[in-house]
Length: 154
Image (cartoon, rainbow, N blue to C red; front, side, top):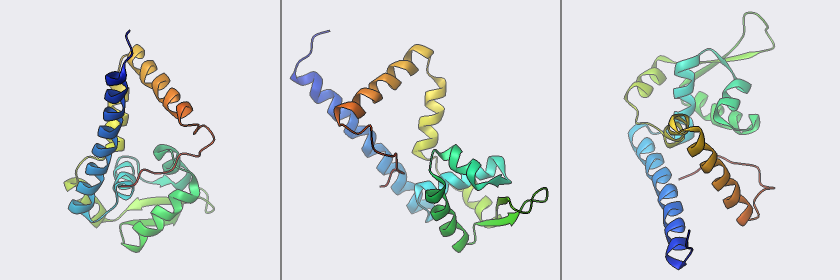
């Protein structure tokens, strides 16, 4: 494969497109629902799996629990989720959606993270491995291996 300046520009342009798409989906979600993309994503996951523990939701969203708690605090302040002690173990906190949250989820646009996860599942093993290795290389080129992944923001 021949490498040239145009090939490098094409890679950077595609990376910019990915960021633009994520930002546009985030803005669309915020305009439509009044929620950030991560708040909406959390509600969508809960809608499919409630009741759910905070740690399970954090794992499903690939976020650290302290980051997840901040998102949940804001959702609770908007009266979109309820936290309650689990019946089987009072020390475990379970999350449930309110009726208002269910209505928001029903009319909400798809979020970029959901689209990416669904798309990755649909790739062939070879395509998936190619994306995985390509992303590892991008991280290495930016000397970013030591960074802890944070939520994407618009």
